[in-house]
Amino acid sequence: MDESIELSQLETEMLQRMKFVFSLRLKNVFSKQQAIQKCIDEFNVSRATAYRDYAAASLLFGELDDVDNRGERMILRERYWFLHQQNMKDRNWAEAKKALDSYRELFDFSDKSGEIEPDKIAAHNYYMKISKQLEKAILKTIDGGVINLNDVDVDDVEYKVVKDEENER
Image (cartoon, rainbow, N blue to C red; front, side, top):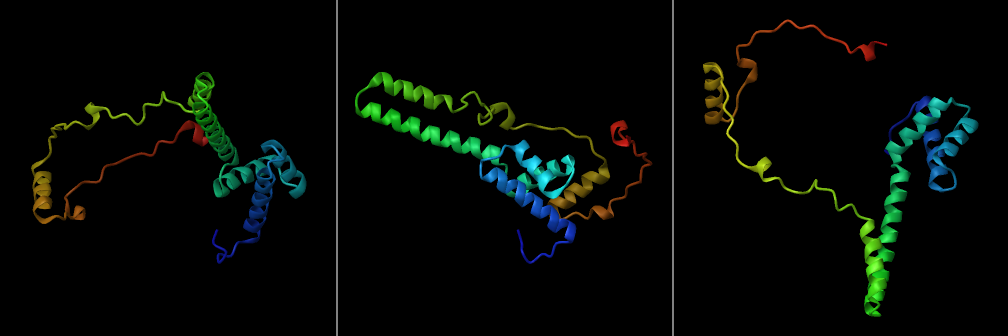
């Protein structure tokens, strides 16, 4: 946060509430609901405002629940790996396998998001029908490197803004 920026009174109060609710969670003594209730009691704000402050604090300072889970997983991972190494050194194969199995359970090996699909990266040919004017503009771009899109002869089209029924309510 840039301290040189001057906040309004409302923004200052909101920042105080965000710091308060985040510090309660940071101490790891209060749950999310307890921290929100403390914010309601301390600052005399509505429940909706307290929830918005909590969400804003999570965006500003980071989500503690995610950090806690990742931190716990990392600690467990380190301990299981240490147990595995100790059991390997002691030639205790059964316990080493148990530690390694517990270590493996901390990871999701079913995730295939990193796999490369050859069909997606293979070269493809796309055939497009374009007007002669656009073809000339593209060829001019290839030759000159720059195209002025403000110089292309186009017509404005009539349109109507359609609102979603949910957004109108």
